[in-house]
Structures are given as C-alpha cells and as structure tokens.
Length: 397
Image (spheres, rainbow, N blue to C red):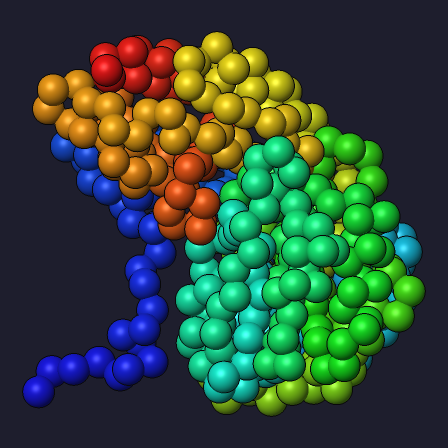
C-alpha cells in the first residue's frame, strides 16, 4: 500500500508557497498577475556579497564544511550580536544552518517531546504549528487581535501556560503582520516565563533589520532570559539573500551542541559558498541594509495609505517586515453573482482569479478575519495591485 508516514500526513502544505505557485502558473499562461504573496525581498543581493560568493568558488570552497559553520563566520555573527543587539554569545553558542527555517525547525526537534505544548501567537508564520506537530508537540494558539497590534499580553500568555508547556514562539518583527514588540513588552512576557521552570522561547528575529521604529529589541536581553532563549536569524531578509539558504541560531551552548548533533545526522554543514558570502555581508559596509530598509518603509507608507482608501479594510501601521495584514471580514457572505466570499481563503482566491493579484488568506496564519499582502515589490506594482483590489471588491454586494 502506498502510504506516507503518519508524521508526514499530520502536516499541511505551505499555503504561502501554494499561492505563489498558483500565481506563477497563471503568469506562465500569459496572465498579468501581480504577486504579493511572496515573503522575500525584491531587491538583489548587494554586489560585494555576490563577489565574495564568486571568489569562494574560485578559491575552491567546494568541500564539506564544518557542521556548525566556519569559525570566522560564527565569530562575525558573535560580533554582530554584540554590536547591534548588545548580546554576548561566543562562537560555541552559535550554529550556522541551511536557511533560517532550519534553525527554527531544529529548535522544535531538539527541545519538544511528544505531548509537549508549544504556545504560538496568532497570526503566525504558517510553518510554526506544522513544525511543532513534526516534533510530536501540540500547538496552543493565542489569538492577538488587530486592536492590540497583533501582540500578545502577559495575561494571555499566563492563561495559556500549563505543566505541559515547553516552548513559546515569538516572531518580531512579525511575519505576517509586521508588528514589533518593544523591549518593555518583551520584558513583561519574560517575567511570566521565568515563573515556570523548563519553559523556553524561540525568538525568530529574521526581520530585525527591516524595522521602522529605530530599535532592536530581543527577549534574550530581558533579565534572566538569555539561558531560556533560542535566537533564530540569518541573512535572507536583511541582505536580500533568500536563495543563498543561510541562517543561524544563537543559544546556550548545551542547546547548540544538540543542534550540532541533529544537523550532523541530516544536513551536515551549510554550503561553503553561501558561508563566504554571509561573512562578507556581516563584515562589509552595512549601508545596503539601511538603503533597503528605507525602500521598504516608503512602500509601507504607500500601501497603508492606499489600503485605507478601500472600503471594508481595517488596517494598522506595521512597524517592521514587509507585510500588511488588513481585517476584511466585512466582505464575508458577499458575492459578485459568480463568486461567494465565505472566508479569507475565498477572499484571496477571488483577488487572484478575478483581480489577478496574489495574496494569502488569513486562515493559513491562524487569523481567519484577515489576509496578508507583501509589499516587497515595486511602487508601481503596489499602486496597480491596490487599484485592482479596490475595483474587484466594488463588484461584491
């Protein structure tokens, strides 16, 4: 009998990748689709980083690399954490992996036992609950509403914790909402966490450099939290290097040793060439990061302005990342005579099939009343996409 494992059958396919694929298929058919479903910068990798990658090939960086990553790269990450984040992590407390996603998955696989509970604030990145399930854990969802800027409160956290709780996931700046926790807000959550033994935090900070509030907060900076926190980060978003597949984790040494053991059995070391490019990213001029951040901020202002002109959209102002997550439940139950909008997935499919704009319904992110738009695209694309959305929504009654 052709049957996949129970472990795999528990997983749902990635809704963001599925929508992106459908958009690409429509484009291949000659349909002019504006893709706002993708979670990656539209900028190109900066030249000095690309040159470092090319040089690595010429210098024959084409062998197996050390499982935790090259020492000089881990030292550069250590220096970055001290310089930018005010955090002290030695190279032995840092491990390099194949994309930020591997670090996140490693955290679940290394810390969560079957039956353990993992608290995940919603809206959440689509893969968090699936990774918790992969590790045998049980996702426990806390819903953070639009009027609280999609950020959970200490009271919500306390009420969700049980003796089975092992891990809390914090993503700041957030995918899919762009919300950013302040250090005071993280310190307040930390006080709740520290009341409970054997409770850890996965702090997904992959969007930290794309923020519009001028500070970099981390729960690892809260008193007593360094030993409880697993920081997951990488070069994908800050340096427009999604395809280079290089992420890293900073955590207490005993956890990093566990990750090293895990990676040694299934992926081994990360691509040599990508590591040399990442080293150049961290050691080089950081103006490229700021230039991209400013570009995203301009686009953020543009899409918020245009979204607020669409009837039925409830919009906050994201403080980071490159996503907008409007509330659109006022459209549920409406129809154009051919399509009926029953939920956010229907809403996103209507925008794609009728308006030729690819977005992702909020159901995939645990927030059924909203949907996600990425503004990691040109100003002209944003203007045209919002024009199309406004026009096709005006047909619903």
